[in-house]
Every structure is written in C-alpha cells, then in structure tokens.
Amino acid sequence: MSTSVKVQFFKTFILPYFDYSSTLLCYFSKEAIIKLAKSYYFSIFKLFKFKFESKNFNDVNNFLEKYGLYAFQHRFLERMLSFSFKSLFFHNSPENLKNIFLKNDSRNFSYNLRNSANLIEPMAKTNSGEKTFGYFYSRLINSFVIKRSMLKFATFKLSIYNNINLIFIDFVKKFKKFDINLSMFFCFQNKR
Image (cartoon, rainbow, N blue to C red; front, top):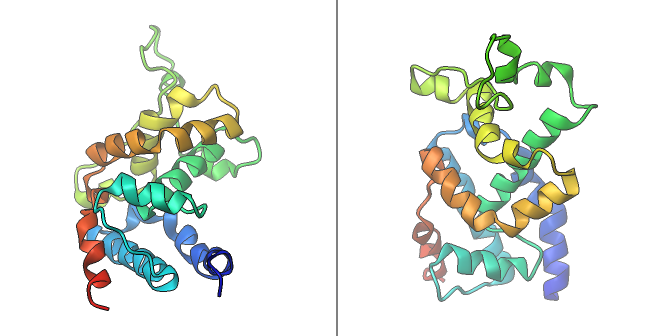
C-alpha cells in the first residue's frame, strides 16, 4: 500500500480508539498512559516502518506532522484543551458538565479578586482526589484555557497548534504523571 493509503487507514480505523480515551486520561495512572503511548507509537512504527534517528520529542512530532499526525503526548493535550474550551464556552455543552466549573467571581465577595475569571480549583488531599474530573480540568483550564478565552474556537485551536511544544512543557510541570520519557518508545525499532 502507498503511504497515503496507510495514513488514511490509520486515521480511520486505529486513531479513533486513541482519541476516544484522550479526554479520560486524567483518571489513568502513569503506567497506563505509558502503555497507551507505547501502543500508539508501535502501531505507527509497524504500519509506516518509520525510522527515527533522533530521540528528541519535537523532532518526532515534526516528522509526524508531515502526515497530519501528532506525537501521542501532543495529540492528547490538544484534545483535552479543545474539550475544556468547548465544555466551558459552548452554549450547547451539557449543563451538568458546565456546573462542575465554578468561577471565582461566583463566590460573591464584597471585593474584587485578581483571578475572578479563573475557576475554583477543588482541594485534593490524596492521589485519588487528584484524579477527579473537577480537580484535573479546573487546573487545566486555569493554566491554559482562561488566558485564551476571548478567542473564537478556531483561533483557539490554531493558538494551541502553533504553541503545542511550549504548552506541553508547562503542562508536564503542572501534571507530573504525563511526563513520559520518549526514549522508551524506540526500543522496538531495534528489535526488527
């Protein structure tokens, strides 16, 4: 098969499985995220017979962009941010979902808050608390979505696309379990 047919096959039959789980990754352990990423890269390497000389994450991402694909980490981050934006600002998003996100200005304080547009971040006293939807997405939205909230969705996505490398660096500083060592994914290239 030609490369274009392989890319279309991958996007049609394999990629939807990874995309389906991307907004739920906040519930996954780091080990489960690593397994999912390994499956993603393994399917790409096997299907396309890609050979990467560089173990640099940005080089891998730049290579995949030629085919309209992202590295696994960039792909799930872009999907999470898009989901967050839609949940918060689209008028047709489910009310139950919107009600999870409360802004600081909803507290009715008699004085102005510096971060009144930010969401209230629920407290998490345990690791299990950090895996809740409200905790994870409130922190994600406050860090990466609120400052771009004045943008239209198409412009927001373009902003994310153009700055994904920088956003990802900040993202893994805030959410440590997503900091995955890329070199572990290249071990199966040498086993052929």
